[in-house]
Image 1: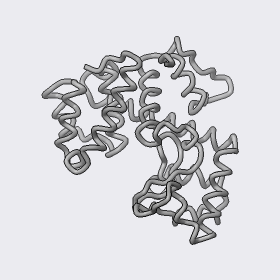
Image 2: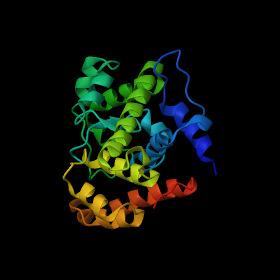
Image 3: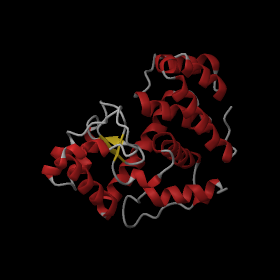
Amino acid sequence: MKSIKERIEALRLRFTTPASAEEKPLSPEQCSKKEKEIYLLGEAFLVNELAGHIDKAYGLSLARTTRSGVSFGICQWDIIHNKEGEALLRKHIPSHIMDLLMQVRGNPSSPFQNPFEHLRVDAGLYTAVQTAHSIISTTPAVLADIRAADRRRLTALVDQVYALFPEGHNTPTGAVVHLADMANQFGPFKKKGSTLAWYRKEGWSSWGFLQFKLQTKHGKGFPKDVERRWRNIEQILDKDNCTKE
């Protein structure tokens, strides 16, 4: 089993790029608490959104829902619902292909393992997906932009937790990763929302957080998804002996 330092470095190589040619990435030994939380959150996204397959992040993926468009990156930028993701691809993908990609939707009833297989009935759409996937997965400039966008998103989510909770940068690592994952799923926390109210009343407990999530609208409708995401994050934290309570 790889140590936290080894996995941080592996994730760094995959989705972190220096802001300039003069800036050198930190070594794992130099990583601050925040840096580690950013990488742990990235690993949580890999497991929860892409079943741990890093190769799927640097190509196109598609969720099996009719609301979902094609996505990419560790943060799964859905080009239908995320203007930043759409703009990033439009920098590198020809307009006529992008226009076709914007028409792609998931199919929850598709019997195929490949989520794009149902598109074969439309040769234009299927070819557009294949072409875009090839460009994304083999073009260094596209990969660099995706890694930088992922890095910005992960950092922003960690900062959001710091800004909302009383402990700021001293918020327990387990709380930061779980809460940032939740914010990524459902949007920014509200200052007078139920999550912040629960935290202020109960304090941090990973088990308590699971019970809280199971009582939310999403938790009552999709308890297995809530338990899956929580369990995956706990396993990631356990491997690194991170403080969860």
